[in-house]
Image (cartoon, rainbow, N blue to C red; front, side, top):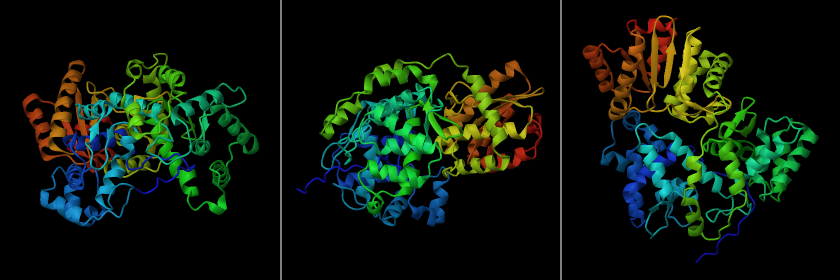
Length: 523
């Protein structure tokens, strides 16, 4: 048996393959049919096929093949021959410890982070085990609509327990990142000489490279940095400090690149801390801080998870991670803050700060599944970002229109997850008409008709009881022909106005309108 490599000090890193909870849940859902089966190379091939069939992974070969690319962007499913073709022409130049080169190692890359989070346990030659929290995540993902609050709580349960030096990692740094962050923020906020804004973005690199769980020492280290350079840190300055924390220097820095420590690592750190719902962005993304709406959860985590058990064995750590702390599910948001007011203020603020052209480009990006590079938008998951961007576009295009999005927000008014299932995504009011806007990234017939158009009918009928001059608008990257047909049938049978737009048509259409009441003009 090869000798296990000794743990080294290195920056905290999370797999960028799994950037958001919905993606983790989707991959777990694809693994569900194989639960309790022995993991072998042949079984991995079955899992790979299921993932490709569900379009959760897109090898470059798909983009190079027009027919396969077209199928990927539409509801049409790949047939068995096409999936075999994709696998054959997409050799994975990839090797993970304990897994064969190729697709076997790709499987480990996909599921490694969900295993660290306690959602699934696997080893070659042993049964695949999906934990209770893994099943909770899958169930929330499969609810109609997706239960994003439950997903957020499951992710919070994982993040508050997660350890940098867990047995699945070879990292000598020993801390629990989320409780450590919360304790550092507490010390900074209690310091009357600091600005109360939280942790500066570039200071996150220090936390990502810190060796232990001592929040007091980090706090003092950051205080010294601020005395030396204010907030005017260059990347080179922070990079040198981080290398020193890791026990190395620039002459030996090939392993730790500045672009990673001062760029990618920061972005991924923020993403993972925000998926728990208890961290807010301040100062246009320059600072991270408590989400004061979740002060009860924050207090509970500090009190109960600052000190934690350390594990040497993978199975023991997994058993710790897989259990749900029921208190997290019961703790409620603070009702001291008028979130509806914050939501509106922030929406109109960003409608002024962003150009209309920028918003239209971001709408196109999110519908094409392209990453945003914007310093705020990139930290908002895609379905929620679509609701936020659509709301901004309506504010910008129709001055004086009362736009009321229903997505959930943090204490800065920035979206945290999508609107609930019993209300419209966005409600708009003017003197003449009311408009309900429903937006989705789902392109399949069943998803659009059953999960969107049917509820839209219900929402619109309720709105018509208050105002007979009301209509609905449905927007998606691609509108399935049956979706448009069902919307037309509701017009014929019940005189309900449900307009359907793909994103390109929607952008083109609203550019031609000056008032909400003009929406019902001929498309």
